[in-house]
Length: 170
Image 1 (cartoon, rainbow, N blue to C red):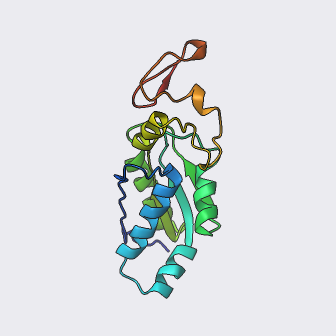
Image 2 (cartoon, rainbow, N blue to C red):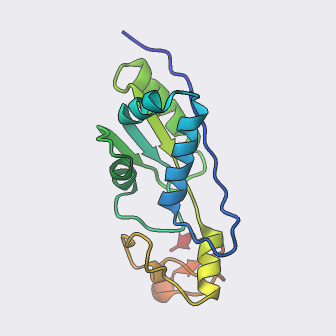
């Protein structure tokens, strides 16, 4: 039997603090926390809803290369999502994920689906200015961050170039 997918909570976080350097996964987790509050449930029911998350989709993060970002989100939330997906870096991915999530709910493949994403370009630029890059307290990157990121857009080894948007081009 199919179910009707509905959006029950939305969370949005912007880190404006000058000395508060937040990594992308922590921004995502804060947005998820706010989305659970947005559901207007009792604390117990909010906790139950979180534990029922069985699908996690993460929009590609171009500012920090995680090894397994959907797995990390799942672990930090304390859930064992059967579906975990990380998108490629393409502008249509959030809408595509929303469509895919709705399909999984309609077909009964998923009961509670979560989509998240986050970027921290401002934090990385601030960390570079105070000579604290890469940030030692952030999750270990899945690949050499210095080969992917340059806050001012400079030439990198092997003919790669990194823009202010942190997109590595071949």
